[in-house]
Length: 186
Image (cartoon, rainbow, N blue to C red; front, side, top):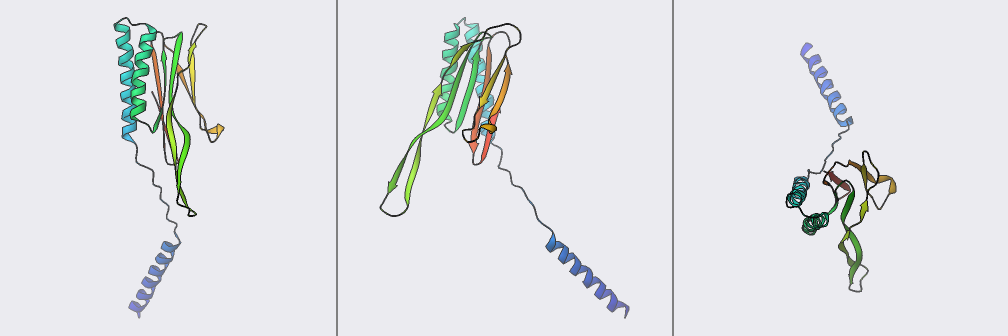
C-alpha cells in the first residue's frame, strides 16, 4: 500500500509541474547584431580627418585649402556609404564649416501592368549642405549639432562639442537599420 501512495504522490507532483510549465510565460528579446563596419567607418573617418587637418597645418596650407581637403575626403566617404548620413564640423576656434551629407528622396518610379498591383521604387539622392559660420566672443565656445528626425520633432538628437584652440574636427554618422537609428559621434 505504501508504494501505491508514493506512485500517486509522484504522479500528482508531475501533473503540478506540467501545469506550472504551461502557465509560465516565455519572454525573449532579439536585438539586431551590432554593425561593426559602421563603427570602424566612424573611427577611420575621424583618423583620416585629423590626418588631413594635420597635413594642412604642417604644410602651412590656408584654412580654405584645409577645408577643401576635408570636404574632398568626406565626399569620398559619403559616396562610398550611401546608406549613412555624415555630418562633420571642422575649422579653427573662429571660423567653422559644416559638411552635411544626407540622403533625400527626390521621387519615385512605378511600373503598372494594368492590374490592381503596381510596383514602385523610391529615387534617392545624396544632398550636400555646406554652411560656414564665424564665431565671435571669448571664453569657452561650444557647438551644438542636432540630428533631426523628419517624423517626430521630439526625437531629435542633440550633441554638444567644446571647441579647442587650433584646428577642430567633429564627426557624427547616422544610419537607419529597419526601425532602429544608429548614431555615432566622434
